[in-house]
Amino acid sequence: MYLLRFSASLRQGCFGRLTGAALLAFGLLGCSQQPSQTITHRAETALSEPDVKIVDYQLVSCDQIWAFNDATATGNPLYWLRAVDCGIRLSPADARAEARRWPADNWQSAFKQAVLLNNGNVTPVERRQYLTRLDGFSYDYPSAVRPLMMLWREGQGSLLQLSEERSRYARLQESSDGQLDALRRQQIALKNDLAVTRRKLDTLTDIERRLSSRRSPDATDTNSHADDKSSPADNPSQDDANP
Image (cartoon, rainbow, N blue to C red):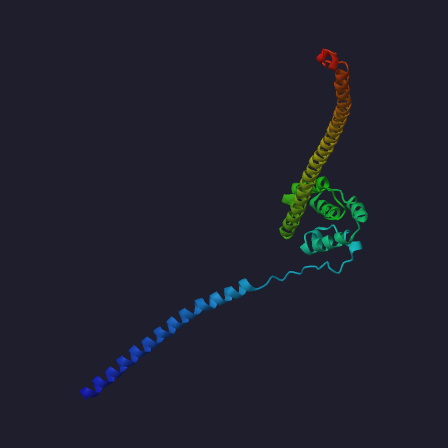
């Protein structure tokens, strides 16, 4: 009897311990699963794309693209990409005519004017002027358009630097050509002086030759006259030699 009671109590204790261990394990499993589910939910929330509709202006004709001037269009970088593409398609005269229609009183008009003038056979002075105007509106650019503006501004700066390098090369070429022309003129002058000197030497040589040819006959005549005029005393006759 005692043994039966002891075994029953033992079985109840083991069952209670097993039940407690099982409940603890399920609790830990539930705690471990809840943070992972929370992290997964947060990751899905962070990776979800915003539901924003962007208007594509690539289908807008170039004749109508310049008429857009509202904040929705000018704040869209795709609008400016289409404007740059249409500006390239214009002739220089048409680009300048369209640029005059947009006074640079805000960043939108200043940017349109710069895009148009870029294809209007712009001079380095004009390019520097409209870049300075754009820099004056640098704080007004929308955040969506700012990267595009910076890239376009960088390209314009490169073109301006290229034109300055070409001007410097042209000045160096002009200076080099001037020096070469001066050397050619100096060479021609030296050749002329050398030719004059040679003619003078030839003239002096000819005069000296003529003088030499005149002196030789005179010397012969002088010797012959001297022989003829010699006294008889110097040449005694036979009678004087034989008294």
